[in-house]
Image (cartoon, rainbow, N blue to C red; front, side, top):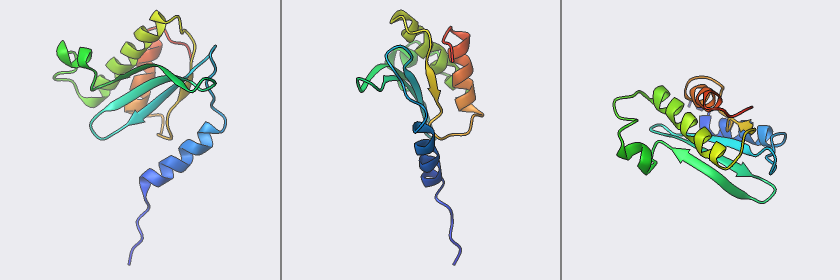
Length: 124
């Protein structure tokens, strides 16, 4: 019998190792990324208070209502989500964040989200 590695368990362990060193404060909150098969989700979290300050995903009503995601591939959608979360963060006067890639490799959609956030004005 062939034992197959559970990729999500491996990612979860990698994420726990990352979380030991990545911590969001009120001055520099954490930008956490979750990637599913269909969508991508991003939150800006203050770990000291334990609250989510800003969130954005491909399921947001304002992104779906004006068809900004329609006809785009998943990487382009991730770029739009990154730009959108940066705009929302800048409205709350959050300029610098710590990037938490969630155990995912920094490539593809995770990288596109980070580049979109940087292009819109977030610093990390």
